[in-house]
Length: 477
Image (cartoon, rainbow, N blue to C red):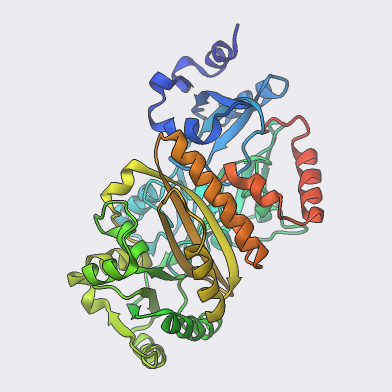
């Protein structure tokens, strides 16, 4: 009996999808990104419940294949891919229960198959006035987004920080609960993150040390006062000054959300129905009434406080030579600004329809919130050798103390030649930015080896020791 037949006997045929080129549908991107001369996906399994997941894990312990947990649909994840051999992908989309939403303490407890659209619909249908923070799209898994350590655009944008309590299935089939969930009789599992003793939740993010089966997430109450704004900047000097101003606003939490700063070209590629071409920033700025650079932020508080804060924020930003400040009144007449504004209040936005034919390799670089660093990183990206003229979407994301340069290297889905070129370009970016002191803080799983090559050995050794302790038989690769 071969592996596929064994899996169908174990989980029932309806839960096993044989991975063949002629019939891989929604999982095509897995073939693009995982399969090579040393490894290939042979099946996708969709367990109905935790018992089936445990049976699969225990069955796999001594078999000639590894398991790869698909965290979110259409994404390759940040969890390491097994290095070689046959791979069985686990898709937990059927474990999609919203277990609890506590309206007093403002949290939700969900299974890994719950996406942002489902959670948002639950809140709206039950008239619960909370905001769901998301990073990419409504179909993204809540648990998967946390596991990948994504950032959304509301004050709760640091999704791992807003996560509280996990249930994880280990490689031996055991279920553990982290934080206060490990304490008998606890009623604060989703209230206090750290529990007692070592804090271990992050061990199961950006890793293949176990499979998250439940996760708690704090939800943001809808603010009584909300004022989004954008600042259109004419040049790099204005960008430098804007970042310097925003640093103080971020550190003092006057502008509490994840502030995005994007070029006109990247904004147009994301939110206008532009062909995926390398049109210049100047052309896109003129066509779509954008600045050369564009800052997006928002204020959230009591209405009187928002008005007071806006005087300070607009006064400081108004000192930037050539800057144009737009607030929410401009939304209706500016489609790109409207899409950006939706994200900052937890609403799902539309993206460029032409992006549907493209996939991307994602890599984020970290730096201080510093104007000189913004200019340097922008120039590093602009001056990177790109002989195949692949398109890149990039933006700066300003968080608590960090400015991330978030880059997507685009390639046509299903085009192996362009994917290889995208990998080469991403490798070059990782090397170049790392050499200049801008380390990687997020990268897709199939590019992690490039990051390992520029990481100090001590941390790598520790990660290997943790992996060996939690998954000695390399069930998860």
